[in-house]
Length: 375
Image (cartoon, rainbow, N blue to C red; front, side, top):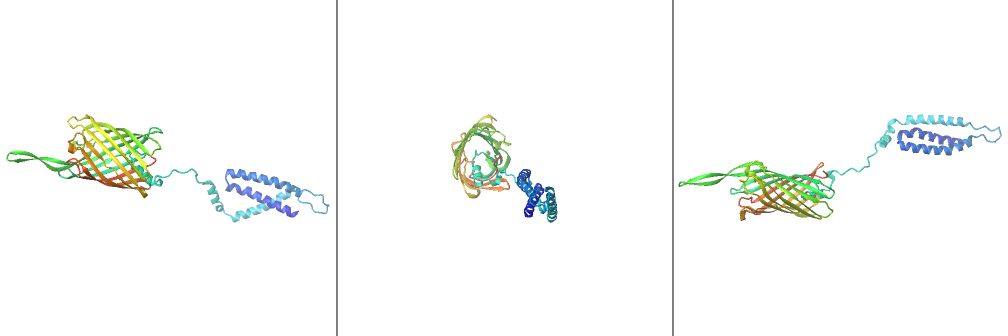
């Protein structure tokens, strides 16, 4: 019987130890579960204990078991001794890591991927799509060589941000505003007198730098799951040039459209627009300008892309031999992520197989494009 009492006391000691230390290392929900478990244990243990310590019908000569209060007091004393020993053998720091883990559970809500973690190949392909749902700021540097009769060099920086706006779940508005900064070579007119006859002579002059005509265009793009995307809208030209040689001096408008086909790593399509002048300086020539830009690109691993997007133009008001400019060329681009900012660098060259007399022979193009996925 003493063994059974000893077993019960040990059980009660373990129970009280659990009640004493579980609040410091468990959460509120775990406390409730622990109390529920302890009550179940007490329900099972106390009847057995009561049966053990109830006076039996054995002869009076045998010693009677201690009353219930005495057994519990003895168990409490033993428990206090064990508790003091446990307190001396463990410092508060021993339990601190457990408490910290309970209070700093990681957030299980999945975080959105950073731009740097997005698929580089997919992002590089989107950058080649003029009507992708992607905010971008291309900075296009064009150096045109052998311009005019004196083979001068012209420089044009096109700042052309692209901003998509979701009009509805099914319709997207893409705005592209081209703002040119131009370094334009000039030609001076001099006169030469020969035998009393004055003849005008053209001479290579200096250059003029300033803002050209701003050219905004807008595309209404249906949003579908198809690999074919298209958009149509208006295109404008505003007479914002800071010098006559840098612009047309006319307000112009017309239609524009684009179609894009995606097939694996390939992407190809065409963009076209037509401008007609309707207002502006009447002393300046009227504008009737056509633009056609076929494009094709192939995406390579690690953000590399090979593409071709020559800009073909026609000035319908010019003489026949000066109407068309038709370039051919190739561009290589690479997408790089700086921290969380994706940037695409592109380098290309174009040779004008057809050009006006005063047109450039060829063009070197370097472009830096800031990309803002998810913006």
